[in-house]
Length: 75
Image (cartoon, rainbow, N blue to C red; front, side, top):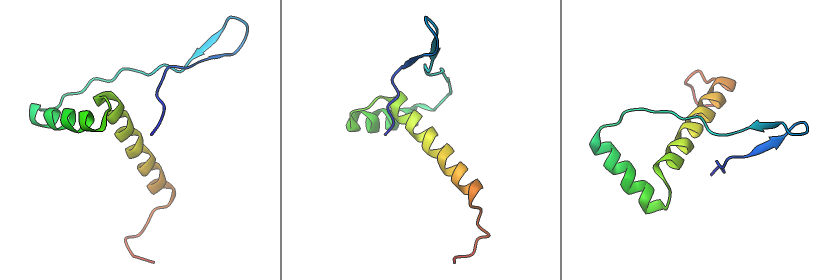
């Protein structure tokens, strides 16, 4: 998985480029939240870490599919 800790990178003397994470809020029903909590806890991770991983994996899959579109036929 990815390392999502805050990192600051020095550009010029005294100037720091921030790579801090942005905040995202969304709604989820209580049944799915309990399932998410149970899974994250059983894996020793936070909900935030798990959700970031899933969103990134989704975006990477979409990017790959756009780069190599298929016409639905197996080679």
